[in-house]
Length: 139
Image (cartoon, rainbow, N blue to C red):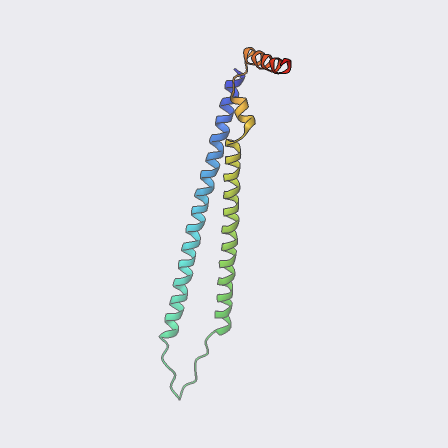
């Protein structure tokens, strides 16, 4: 009876661990999709900015050269680079966490104590194990 309860608990734990793994995978996919979409939006904004710059009429000699917001553009590019680096670090951390979860799942599957606990606990098994030990000691 205790063995059945233990089997049920271990099955529930294993199911929960697999559920955690699936949730982490799903979260990772969502993070990747979000990062891709945000990168696409930023790229489209940069393209729009480039298009607007390219559509400026060339200056004539009578007019002054328009001043572009160089500092703002450089700041935007620096911010964009920093955000890419931050996203890359977050992705690497997420990959490490996924690897850790996979390692835990592999460890749980190969756990010797768990395998021993799944064997039935009966008086006959204990007696046969004791007899086997006595026979080995006696020979």
